[in-house]
Length: 244
Image 1 (cartoon, rainbow, N blue to C red):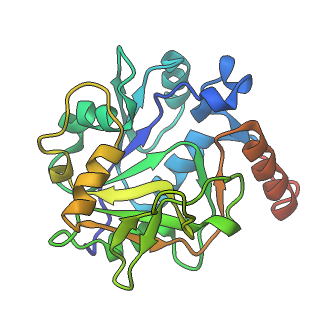
Image 2: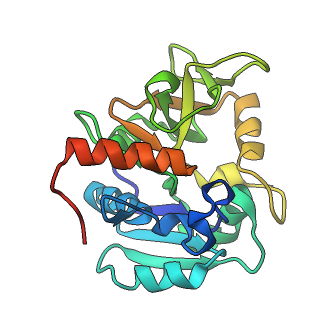
């Protein structure tokens, strides 16, 4: 795929349990780093890439997110409200009527990144091959990530095809929560709440899940410690710059 998708989905419905007590009153997408909310960082990346339309699913403290997003002039934002929390996979299936039939970006709001020489979303679009891939995931080195304490997610072949990290082993790469996917990946998906990993596993079995390695910084902001790491780095890297 050589053109940038015009549509994206931001997953913003979760409760942010590991971010407590911060998330008791502030939904994770509205938590700020250097005075700028996590969801606005994601939206700014999408606008810079040329995305025109973004679907945002909301549930936990959703009215706060909806009110905040009304302040933005771009992109066009469509809210996908969930009466019951549908998890990542179910949330995407619920939003499919708004996402069209072309490939689209999917972003988690606990992922804050700085681009390398080429913007990450442009790299995803350039590397995505609709014929051979259900999805192309953005990955990052586990040892160079900020706020990440896991064992990694995938092993990457020389062609970029992914396989799961073997149980009880370490993998050098973690999924950043950023990808480009084709709507066909959601065909015959389960109903109700389910994890996107269910569909990843199906694509892995079909050898249609691929990844590229991010060449900039990545901050996994899933806990207060991860938030502190991101805030410290950004304050040092960009002193005196605070968004309103």
